[in-house]
Amino acid sequence: QVHVLQTGGGAAQPGGSLRLGCGTSSSGAFILGTIGWYRHTGSQRELVASIDRSGTTNYGDSVKGRFTISRDFDSDIVMLKMNNLKPEDTATYYCNVEGPPGVFDSWGPGTQVTVAS
Image 1 (cartoon, rainbow, N blue to C red):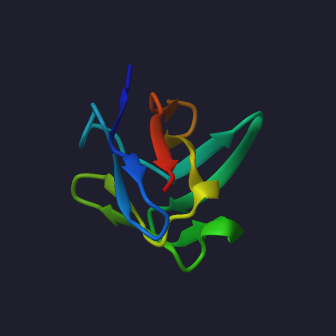
Image 2 (cartoon, rainbow, N blue to C red):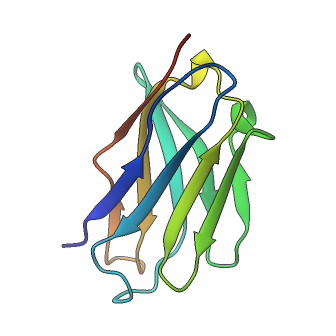
Image 3 (cartoon, helix red, strand yellow):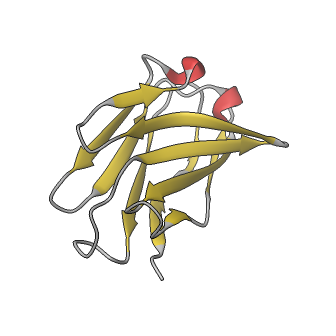
């Protein structure tokens, strides 16, 4: 079983910055597909940012220009740099890792991000 590992998060003031990291327990064992960050606010799940194997990125409208996703293709570690944080960014953030088709599609345990004065 492949485990998704998450690091970072925590609390910040509005306008501040935080960083999230995502990796897997199977580093190097599988060719990974798209890796993305999602957040849950209430009952809604929202795409924050994703990056595929070609390096193509995709961002949710609410974070464009503020968040940056990057990927180390040797280690398949993905970083999400969150700048100019707003209170509405407060949520639990989950990393999703797509493995080879039909092999796995795994989620991390969640990391809380709180933005408040």
